[in-house]
Length: 122
Image (tube, one colour):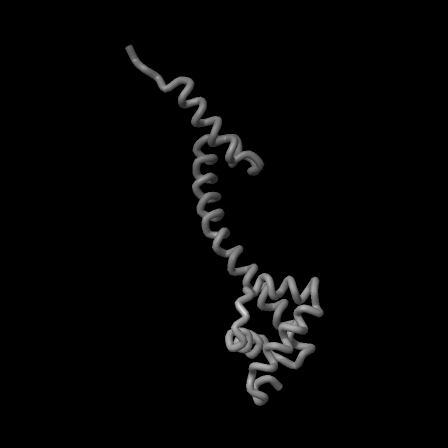
C-alpha cells in the first residue's frame, strides 16, 4: 500500500502560505513561488536586522553632532572628552538626553569641556 504524506503535507503547505501572506499575486498563491519568496524574505530579514542597528547608530551620531554644534564642539571631540571624563553613556542614551533633557546634556558637555585641553575644546 502506498503511503502519502496527506495531512502532514497540508500542514506544511499551510505554514508556508501563512508566512507568504501579504505578497502580491503568485507570491502568495503558488507553492513553488511561495517557497522562493520565503527564502528571499528570510535572507532580507536576516540582513536587515543588522542594517537596522547600523541605521540607528548613524541616527544617534547625527543627532549628537547637531546637539554638540551650539556648544562649539565637534562630535569627535565630544566622544573623546566623554572617554577622558570617564562618562560611559552610549550614543543612544546621549541622543535621547540631547532631545528630551537639554539641561542634563549641557551639564555633560560642560563636564567634557572641563576635561578637554583648551585647543581641542574650541
